[in-house]
Amino acid sequence: MEVVKGSCSWAFVVLLGLMVVAVCQLRMVHGADLSPSQCKEERQLGINACKAVVFGQPASPACCQRIRVSHFECACPVFDAKLAALIDVKKATKLLTDCGRKVPRHFKCGSLYFP
Image (cartoon, rainbow, N blue to C red; front, side, top):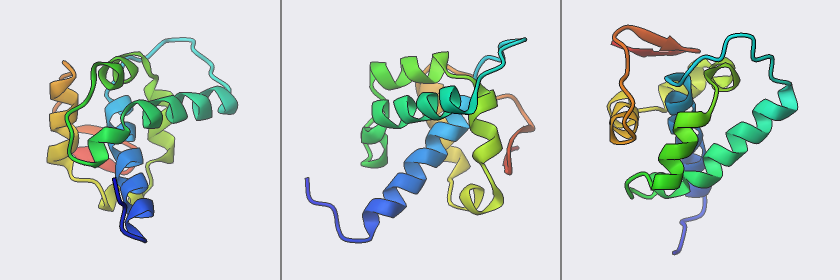
């Protein structure tokens, strides 16, 4: 697969955004005090599992599993206004729905808002 120069960083931002949105919707583990390195590892696992989503493919079973087991506490804090501006909420919602997750109305994850 050939990637046009410059599109790789855009694709990475979109993928990261999709993963952040997906992870933000996930379960909250009360008392889970994850370290920054644990959160970084969790985000990287999600990015690796869901790379194909950037290229228009549906989420794989491994991607959906990663979405279901990740902690929103690791993702939402990195979702600033610049990243939120690059994310299509409808596509992010579809990713969650395709993986069996429901997006709550008026959900806010970092700077991203789901109406």
